[in-house]
Image (cartoon, rainbow, N blue to C red; front, side, top):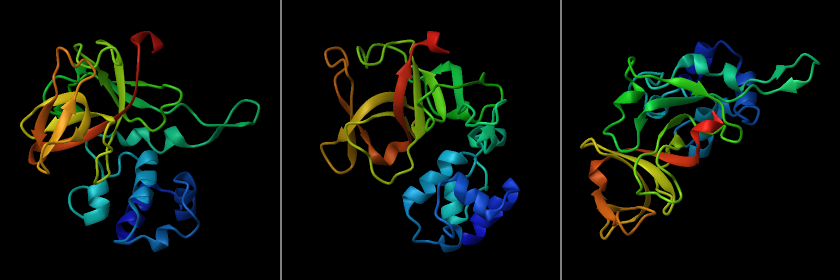
Length: 224
């Protein structure tokens, strides 16, 4: 892993010490990175450099960069710059918003589709969010209303934080925004809507789970 992170730092064209400062890592942290590196450290790096393929960093498999991230978004969007008065400021964090995509469509192909409409938005207070899509339907009403923009980040942990809201993507092509709870067996996960009357809970097989994106917030379109 140490060799791979040095390769990525070389790609960025910055020094190791600058990389550690950008990621809020201790001095010398990069030299100590290995198979026992904590997931919290990996998350810190991913939050600043979302184009880094963490699977590649951990295992060496695949490409160094995520195809679903634009390298131009980082690291410049998170660097500290000086304003006209010489005061240090952080430029707005950039979120990739897919205006034609909602949480009830299938798959995550839109992340890789070069023809998919995408725009870049900045929402104060959501610096840890990477993607935004539209909510659709009344299953999460009144918490999340149809047409609102859902802000989310890829879930990188090996566990599920039960009770939180996620965008669930299955291998069978299903995509839905729900609260997640343990299933009736160790092999299942229960998906729960806010609107229980018209949208009863249902279970999905863990083996069918492809990706999870944790929902950090939702806003009205007028905000952007």
